[in-house]
Amino acid sequence: MRREAADKTSKKFKTLDLVYCSIGAALIAVCSWISIPTEVPFTLQTFAVFLVLLLLGGKRGTIATAVYILLGAVGAPVFAGFKAGAGVLLGSTGGYIFGFLFIGLIYIFFTSLIKDNIVIKLAALVLGLVVCYAFGTAWFMYVYLKNTGDVGLLTVLGWCVFPFIIPDLIKMTIAAVIAKRIEPVIKK
Image 1 (tube, rainbow, N blue to C red):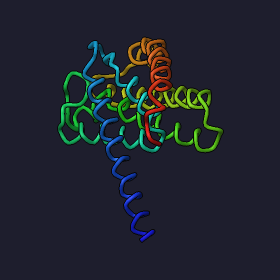
Image 2 (cartoon, rainbow, N blue to C red; image 1 turned 60 degrees about the vertical axis):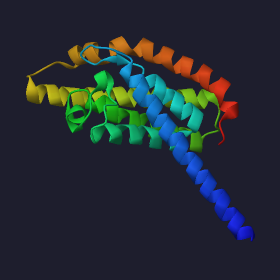
Image 3 (cartoon, rainbow, N blue to C red; image 1 turned 180 degrees about the horizontal axis):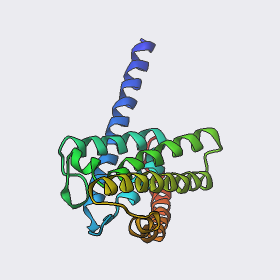
């Protein structure tokens, strides 16, 4: 009898995890549609990734991010500008989208090894964002070189990173404030 109750509880938590991951992926998708088109569009994707990680934790937040990427890969119009497909992921900005996974993985690493507090969480998000920028920039340069021609690192950083640093830090701060208010109602 006790084992049956434990199995039901276990299934309930697994179902709840799936629900949270689905909602997280949907939030990232909706936030990606809010964009200002540029070479690398200004979107609220990073805000949503930060918020999902802060609210759901590293594991569920990273799974939600992976689900978002997989949805886009199979053709659901979840990327900026309602775009979808492997072409977007393999295009010049695809590295930044894949970079969201690095934010989640670094977040998991930091929050599981070091005391889980807001300073550690924000430090993990900042480091993850730096890795996302680095991976996305390397990807962008590779695709741009292959399709268009030679381009310098400072030029790419000027297009793809420098204009996003302050907005992304502001998004991270807002996500932390919102997460602090919503976190008490989220079942961990």
